Image (cartoon, rainbow, N blue to C red; front, top):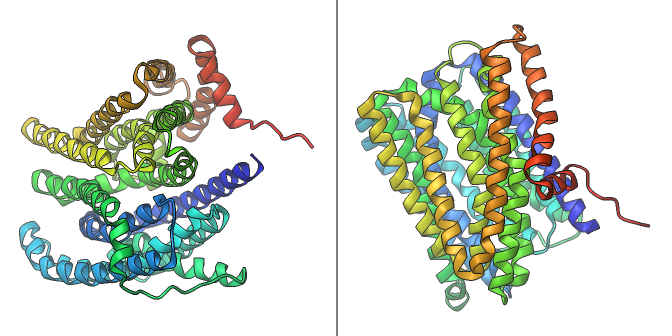
Length: 485
């Protein structure tokens, strides 16, 4: 338990540092750069992210999931990831003129290849993360991730002041990919541990991780194609300025969501892989984790949605009013995805990445259908709800698949999650009425502060009435029990 508390503390510190660095740099960049720069950079990053994550995530997850791992497994994964990095660079260089022609943005021919250069760090980063996760060196993992984001944010701000707006936005997102494996190697060197693994081809060893890797590769392809599809569909339907508004809305929500989800997945995956031989127990543990995470994530993201009309203008200044309704719907999507994605962490720990692939495909289809409806209705403010609908059907599929392993045992966790959502919904409705409709406090920053304090006080009281077990979980999370001497 002491080790787990240490890992959670380090991971929480990592999330806090990364969020702080990303938030501060985004606030500064939003005041220095126009919406068009944010729109172009999102188009660039969404394309590069699709191929970039194909290079790293499948191998990271496959290496972490294997019961037995040897150095040739790592060497083979690194060899293939380097090869895929080169292929990705060539593909992105080749398609950038076509994308520029389709969107009418000539600068994509420059910025897509520039962003693609950072993909050289994906393979080493994947192997480094896999090794750190397998050996449960979450403190080293957290330190390397946090420092890479801080340094990248500082460089991005410097570039923005120098007049390199789009490059600054690219560096803010892509430079941590290169810095992370370098920093992880430095920390390993300080500890006197092996730093370098050379890429080598071992056909047999690569074959042992192939099934998991390629199913996970397909899942990652769809998962990371989803924001790219969102970006280009919105650009086609509503224009680049609308894409810029989405970029700002995402930057208010996505860093928190992805940081919590990524760190949580690493910890949860490490715990659940211990029960690979007992799928029923693994499923029950996954369902319990979803309930426990919901007690914190649901009120946090719903509360963030409630405060968005006050918080967003304070952070990024005027000119971003259209981002407010989008950010609110993205918060709702995060409240769904952060807990329920742990169903799929359980499936991955069980060696069933195809379930996650099915969820990603279903979510992508739902999102595209919703975006088409937005275009027909002429409602760009509904864009964010396409993500919420996508996450909702993905969560529903995850719960349905989990029934195969634990049957009726899923009923109680789902009932408790429903009560948590009722409590969070009542909290948001009360906060919205008092502080946004009635406007009992006119001054924006004071109203925001009062709104946050009121939500923190109100939510536990609602849980006390609706779900005492959920309240006990919340208190245990916020106020961990101390170990005896």
